[in-house]
Image (cartoon, rainbow, N blue to C red; front, side):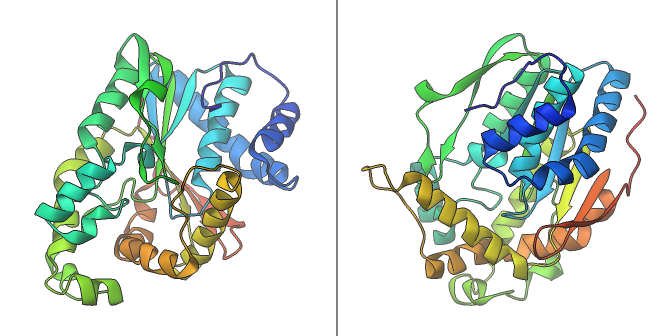
Length: 311
């Protein structure tokens, strides 16, 4: 909940104070937001004003990099500081239901039972949702995915937003990632690929999906932001912190939940190592706003590798 906000313009310090409480963030995040993300929100709001139409903003960041928090912050700032209607979405909410992934695992490759990589998202649903939010009129149902249960939330419980919106923010770990060259797929990058995908069939399917079905979606994005991890080595620790927080949120729920152990998580993130490393190497030069993180997720530099397109 809390994805939609159409507040009147308010003082930034009051907005940030409320945001910290809502997101349960430490007080020092207000300084980070003021230094780095208020200027980002202002620049994107100016871009929206010049364009004079709904915009799609893409945020790329590896698991645990803080992209969902940034997406929520930008949504809040757009509304409260600029009077723009906005929504923040995650590519995770477009995962295929578990039964569809089970079918892929049976028909294509067993590794496709695990959500996350290209080929495990409902791309037609994502395309329809983005189009409806930017070009439609009236209520639009927003898909949701329950990671604790590893399945899509029933449609009756999806939230709704009134289209068209001024800003549609989409975040994801592989958002904007280009496909790899064929020669780059030949050598396994970890034990998961070596032992469970020795002939490369899984990684080639993932790469083909990325090329054929994901790139057309990414081309609809008007502005790109990247939270760049220092390396893949940081991702496990960041992702482990996420899983601990998930476990804390559901520990009072009597229903069974799918919470991963550290060993399970170590294997899980190997599904993402190839494309995460590829993204860190290739995407930074293509984004409009680049924030480089250290191992503690502190921003150590910011730059604008590409200029925003002319309105």
